[in-house]
Amino acid sequence: MVNIEKWKVILILAICALGVLYAAPNAFDRETVRSWNEDLPGWLPTRQVNLGLDLQGGSHLLLRVEWQAVAEERLQALADSLPREFREADIGYTGRGVVDEAVAFTLRNPDDYERAREIINELDESVSVTLAEDGRVVAALTEDAYTEIRNNAVNQSIEIVRRRIDELGTTEPIIQRQGANRILVQVPGLEDPQRVKDLLGRTARLTFHMLDETASVQAALQGDVPPGSMLLPSSETGPQGEPEQHYVVRRRISVSGEHLTDAQATFQQGQPVVSFTFDTVGGRRFGDVTAENVGRFLSIVLDGEVISAPRINSPILGGRGIIEGGFTVQTANDLALLLRAGALPAELVVLEERTVGPGLGADSIEAGQIAAAIGFVLVVVFMALIYGRFGLMADLALVFNLALLLAVLSILQATLTLPGIAGIVLTLGMAVDANVLIFERIREEQRNGRSPISAIDAGYSRALTTIIDSNITTLIAAVLLFFLGAGPIKGFAVTLSIGILTSMFTAFMVTRLMVVTWLWRTRPKTVPI
Image (tube, rainbow, N blue to C red):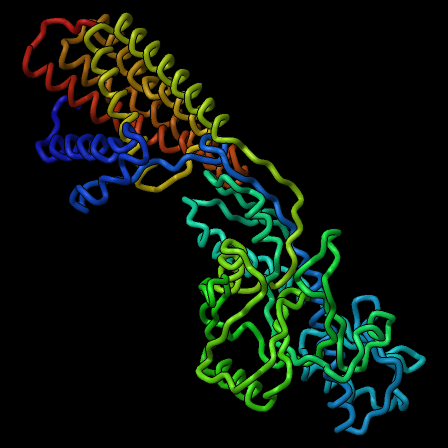
């Protein structure tokens, strides 16, 4: 224990130097560090610890994914596919519809059940089909199918939410699943949380439909909507929030927005518009639709509202088009963002909303810094008074421990929260525990008559097992907090876990290197401890 190989000395010094280097950017404000990216070489570290929502302010949203609507759409699609299939198979039925989360209909001839069941399973193999005594057939999704639909809807929603938030240019948003059908969204530093709600609250499903020019809007408002058409409001509203007008559009989708590859806000004749680009399939379909309907009106529908319904003056080829709708610059940018990110598979409902102002975050940082400084000073003074020269060595190792902790947080781009600062303060106290055990052991060995070299060797070797056991038990608790906790608990667990690992390194390696160096240089007759 009192002999350290040269390569270990070099490794310890290199790790400490790298820790200080990677922790250094955290001593400067963020604007200064950003300017370094242009002035300093690329190999120099410029990453800082990310501040959480409670430290720099921002928006916190808890969303629920209405995945049941996806299951209903799937059942409705199955119900809409049955007439053609049954007609080709010459199977008679009555009363087809979606009732009580199942597709139900009555067979004219109960003997057709097996053929009907095979057709249904070919259309959707995850459907369970049963036949009642009265000839009524019920096709319902299985539990496994519901679980798959829910998981797919939540996972896809998380990905779309991440794309939309990333488009805002925010730093390190937290987007994660909570429970079976909830999504936690935290956007630190965002000054306009309402904009996040607006972006996430829209499904952004874009479709193109032909206008039903033979139908009367007034009659449709009275409930007389022609078969194969639907009545939709315009996106523009009046003073009382009512739609300025309504449209009767064909239910059949001429072109779907899923073929969009890009959307950008631009200007046309001085007015903000949104230009869009289709992929090859969508561009060809859009060109065919416009070529076949020159002189007619094409409605552009977003989330069940008609943005605009322009006349097709000529075929639009090349897969490019423009959406006009009385946009402002921001609404045009937001619509382009939504279209680029893609449509949500299901509606998101805001269950919980919290907004933290930057002033409160600044107060939290200041309070955390004061607490950390007081804790650090008290530990330094205590160690110096109790253990003298050896206590000062432990204090110097504590500085390297704090630098390594900040360096690891910066490299991992972990998010530091207020409980995380509490974990750092706790780590400062725990970091000297190992040194206390070692120094007390050295004292005891010296009282038993051992020489300085023998006492120090015994102090490090015999305290090793106790130190490892105590730190591992704490580390296990921190790991469990990380995997079983959420939000602030995770932040506390991260800093505590990293602090335990860095404190063990500084106690066994850094402090021991200083003690051994002092021992071989001075050759003392007694250990001043």
